Length: 310
Image (tube, rainbow, N blue to C red; front, side):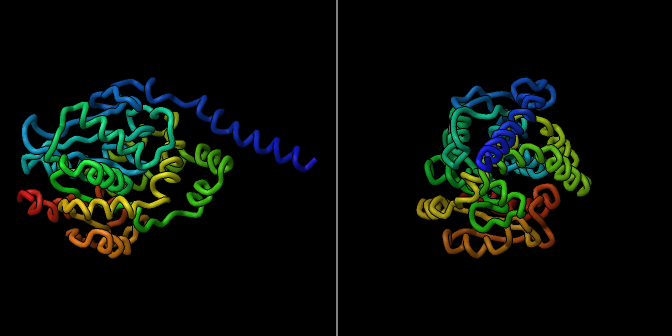
């Protein structure tokens, strides 16, 4: 009888994500006005993207991280365009205004495929400055390693896939099939709301980032996308990818928050072992939300490097 009870519990847990998602909006059903920008119809799904800045100038492609959509780049992008750059931002599948993506685990290859499809769709061929934040740094590095001839330089901000700290809840969900999946879905809205409140408390330019997190609450597929990416992209790490970037000889700039409890400062030393030529710096008192809390400090460190041709 015990195995019958366990089977019933397993069935109930498996039904939780289905029930919760049935009461959520699909990204494709969201009003277009709630997510400004354009939609690219790509092979793996619809991708929302936006251009920030003018219609001419060198291009920066900025890739956001695990949970926060592309609005996380807004404060820094507004500074970068003063240097004459155009900044392209987009939402990863399952986040923001992009669809959930089709047909496979959200591993690094999945994410790099989305980035590759998007820049191809937009006709961006070479001399791209790639910027990646948190998991976005892994994605940017994956693209650079695969197509170094298209990249001018690589900028990594609080790069994941090197040394990552995770909460007991995140670790349990990542390592526990079925029950972890159910808990991830059930707790997703509350955790997004709490994250938005933390960002909002930073004040100033962080408000629109918090608002974007608020707009993600209740969207179908978000929790699954986050968990899949945590399991298949972040947890395995990207040592081979970062070492492959080193082998290309591309200029690499890495910035870290000294108070980051998600990607600890120990990652700086580890990355030094993998990409010895990387130019690295850290920002005092900055946590993992440094794009929202310290855009001026990030810009000050990047400005002299972006004004010179590699």
